[in-house]
Image (tube, rainbow, N blue to C red; front, side, top):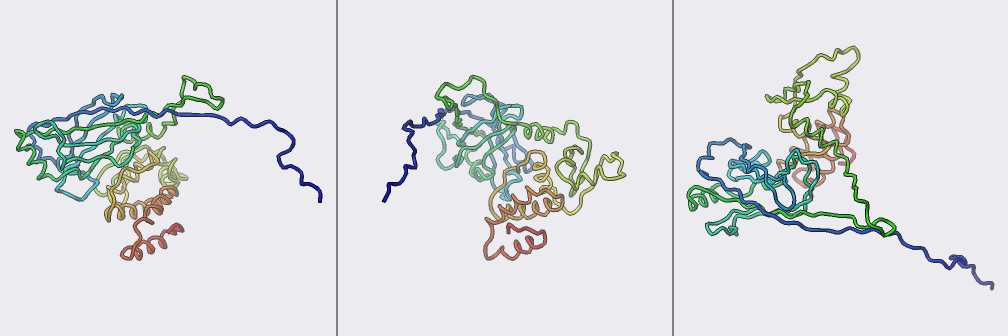
Length: 321
């Protein structure tokens, strides 16, 4: 029997692997936000907050702490305070960070019973906020304030992850110039946040939203037909939208401008929000949002919800459900 030919051939030279590397550097910092006259905050409405103002920590001069003494829109719990860490909306660089927020005692040490830490590293984009809508019970905060002459001190510890490429494929040092990732969504999100240049008023569920016709039309064929359809003059400055809740439309509009959704909490309230967003996505032909909603609703399917979710899937032709 003849010998088998070599599958490697006769070339004895070995290939040289390409090379790349990154350095992961951690930078830490902290800030203490003091609120005097805490008892006077009881009159604030839900979702109203006090801000620490911008401060520098962990290598970035862009942070602020937002304190919600009477809760936020992200939870139905009216007995808790909310606290968030925010990246300034004018900051042009995304920041990867994790953080811990604690209430300090009279000795300036973190109160072990009132402390929360992020479970993972967040990617903070321009104007983004991350935190805890149910940071602590109001009663516990008021008790701490009574010990501190009607004052509380909130400490935020921040750890930033800096990822730096040190080698190219040939093993040489990387170029000094690093082209940042696309940031168009941040700029569009800023337009929605500020209302600058808005030319359309949307009346939804008793609330008013300001938007830009061209952006709505570019994102949704339904809006395009409604605003710029055949033989339609582009003179409308206000339209009413029926059959959608204001809080749902707010998240829907956020997606149109940012191609992402605001942070939402787990639980039955979140499931209802995903259901309403799916209906809105189908109504305005936003296929990506519709798929996102289907993916999220899969997490809520159980014996108590399967009937309603399957009915929704059948009504709106959702193959993913």
